[in-house]
Length: 211
Length: 211
DNA sequence: ATCTGTGAACCGGTTCACAGCC
DNA sequence: GGCTGTGAACCGGTTCACAGAT
Image 1 (cartoon, rainbow over the protein chains, first blue to last red):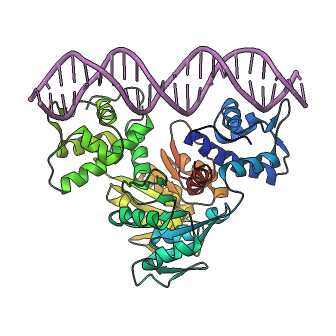
Image 2: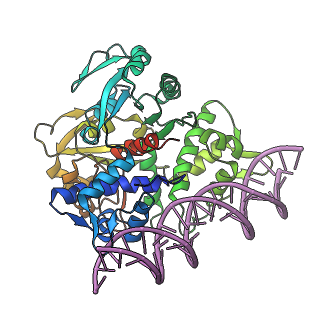
Image 3: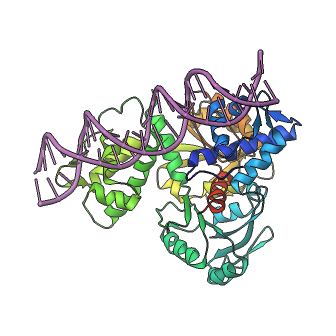
């Protein structure tokens, strides 16, 4: 894997994540080799797209043969930075925070929840799986101690920006927010927001304007 | 609002949904007029982008003045198809399904959960808020009766494609899936997938390759 | 003077098509 | 012959810049 050029499109990274899932399925089925065409069919793209996506990072295939499933899995994991586990804190122990804390899709990908926080005294001390909800006031000292670089925010919209500022000040460098509010973070902090109402609104739009 | 041209980019629709949120905040603060620049600043775009997005659907502003907050709210709601409520079914009463069933962001936008389904006997009969989990076997007859056009899937990956096929056969025209699995649906059915692990993987990538 | 509406220019992601290797 | 790797062409979304309305 050669060093990635200055900028890779997010859509490429998103597809790599998808390819990784398919490759793992292929591996589970005992398939040792795949072509870009097979990967494309599974993922709803084109073979040229698959080859282009991979070519940004190196030459992983063999001409005339395809890609070795195991090798490509290892390469994509390395590209995405998944060879070592990522400690993650979840902030907000409401319904969504609780669901995510026990979401297996995170742990199987190497995202380990090392802390869960809330400011509601009724929630502090509650356990979700193996993890106990702690007082949000402990956040700064815990982040200093455990050094998670990723925070998942499941707090109400009104509290979201304040919490972004706090975790950033404490040293977190990446944030995934489920609050339906626009957030700002410094340039060196990655911030992603998933807005479930917007997803439904896009569906409503397409239903309304279906030909 | 003139008829939308053949195709509008999804990014435009996503931004309209965002503008709508800001406009509602402006309205709550009693502001009666906004400029494209103000909307852009709230949403992290440019004023030209805001004007272009809106211009696909009509001329909603007044030159020299800006946009009337109330009018623009009404116009965007109409564009997105939010003037009337949308009945929605949630399929899968696990952690995520349960969280979504009680998510207020859906109901405040006019998405009303009219049914919740699971095939696990232990979950059937459970109540979430005002809604009782029903046997997944009732799905087809319930969809025929209540005619929800949107289904939210919170089932395990293995069950996801099968459930897509069932709800499509029953008449659902739009699907939002939280299963980390690739899904196929006919062309006339809108299908969106939210993959939370992929979101974290994009963050892991940016952390790994931060300059 | 100010701010919208929009054609034109620009830019970057996708697709094409073919050279290169197995 | 088959499939990868990649420059070049293409396409569509964003940005620019200015004409037009108040």
